[in-house]
Image (cartoon, rainbow, N blue to C red; front, side, top):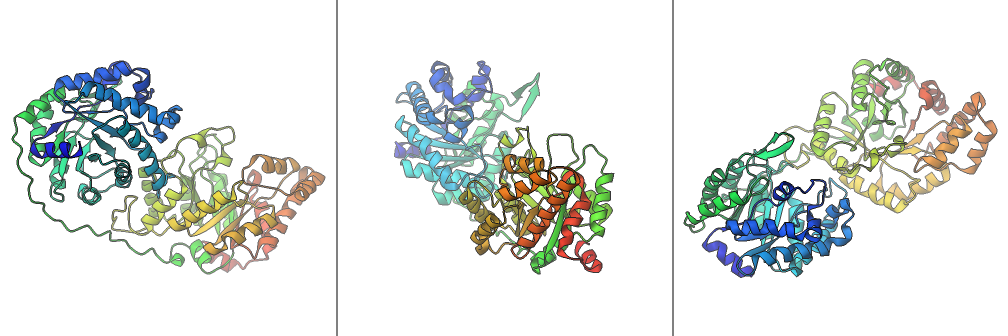
Length: 622
C-alpha cells in the first residue's frame, strides 16, 4: 500500500478530508469531552463525519485519533485505553473507506514540551508515539499523518517512531504563524530540510493559519526540497461570534488556493479547523480541474548558521557572580514581596540590609495565595531605589515559554542579572492547588532558555543579535525524599547551564555534608539556606509540613525547652549561627530567611561570620 499511495500522488493530487473536531462540536459534543473517546462511546457519530467527507469526494479519511496518545489521554483518565481507542478509530474509518479510499492514521502532538525545555524526554516521546502508531497500524491504516507539529524535534520523534513500527507512507505536517515560522521561531526552510533528511514521504503544513499564509510558506518550502508537499490550512482565522469561533473562508476561496498549492508541488490537499464537507467538495472540484506537472528541480539554499555567541565570563555578569567566581563567601537575605502595592517597608528593609553589608537581597516568586506585588516589580524597585544586588526567584508557574522569554529580556534591560530558576515554589502555596497546574516548561527548561539567551539565541535557537549576561541559579534540595531523582535533575540543570545552586534551610548538618559529597563532582557553588527558628511550633511546622526539610530531634528538643517568646527566638538564632559555622567551609554562601520580616535578626545571625569591612561590603553590592 505504501508504494501504491506514493505512486498515486506522483500522478495526481489526493484530497484529504477536513476538520473532525469542528463537525463533532457542531453535532453537540462538548469541548470538554475527549473527542478520541467517541470512537468507543459514540462510534456512529464518528462514522457520520467520515461518511460526509467520503460523499464530498475525499480520497483520504483521517482517523479520529489526533489526541489519542497516552500523555493526552491521561488528562481524561483514559491512559489505559490507548490501543483500544486507536484501534477503534482506524476500524471506523476503514468501515467507511472500504477499499476505495485511503485511511490515514492521525497522530497529533503530545501537548507537552519535550526536553530540553520540558519534562518529557525524547525517548519517552518516541515510545508514546510508537504505542499509538502500533495500534493504528493494527487497525489497518494505509498511511500516517503526523500533524499540527510546532516543534520539529517532536515531529522527528513521531517520524522515527513510525519508521520503527511500520513501513507505511508518512506525511509530516508542521504548523506555522503568519511569518512562516513555527511558534518556536524556526523558519519553514529549516524544518523542511530536517524532515527531508529524516525521510518524510510528504512534508506539509496544517492548522493555525489560513490559505494565504500557507501558500507563502509552501513557496519557501519548495525551494529546499524535492519531496512532495501537503497543505491542509484552516478555513481562515477564526472570529468570535456570540461566544463561538466562526471560520470565514468560503469553500470557493479555499478551492482557489488549492490550485495554487498544487502548482507548487502539493499532492495532498484538504483542510483543518473550520473546514466542512462543503469545503472538501469545492477542493475536490479544484483538484479535478488542474493537470499535475512533473516535479521541479530543487533549488539549494545553504544551511543557516546558528551564530551562537560564547557566554560572557562569569565574573563579568554581576557583582554576585564575580564574588562566586572568585570563591568568596556571599551573604544573601530574603525579603518577601508585600501585600498590596505599598513597598515602603520592604525598601526600608533592603536599605538596612544593604548598609549592613549583605551581598544580595533574595526575593521569592510568590508567597501564599494572597494578593502580593510581583517579585519582578519588587526586584526592579530595589535595583532602582536602593541600588542593591538582587537574586530574583523566577518560577514557571502560570507562564508560557514566550512570556518567560519576554520577561527575561525585560529583566536584563532593567539591570537584573541574577536569576534563581524554579519550577514552582510549592512550599509557599499552603492551601493552594496552583502547583498542580500543568506547566509548559519546568526549571530545567527555564535554565536552558536562560543559557540560550546568554548565547544570543532565543528559546528556538534563533539568533537574537545580542546576548544577555545572567547568573543562573537553581534549587537543590539535599533533604529530598528521593535523592536519586534530585541528583538526576541537578545533572540536567548543570548540563543546561546552571552556574550555582541554592538550598532550602539546613538544620541537619550531617545529612547536608553527606549530600554535598555526592554532588562535589559538579563543581557547582552552593549557597545554603539558613532559617532562624522562632519557637517550637515554628520548628514543628517546618519539620513536618515543608517538603525537603528535616530537623534533627536534638534541635527540636532545644526549641521545645526554649518554648516561645524571646527565649525561643534567642535559641533559634543560636542554632542558626551554629549551623553557619558548621557548614562555613562546605559552601560558598548563605541565604538567610527572615521570619516575620525580622531583617535585624538576619543581620544578627550573619554576625557570627565576623565583622566585615564596610568598604568591601559596599563594593560587593553595587
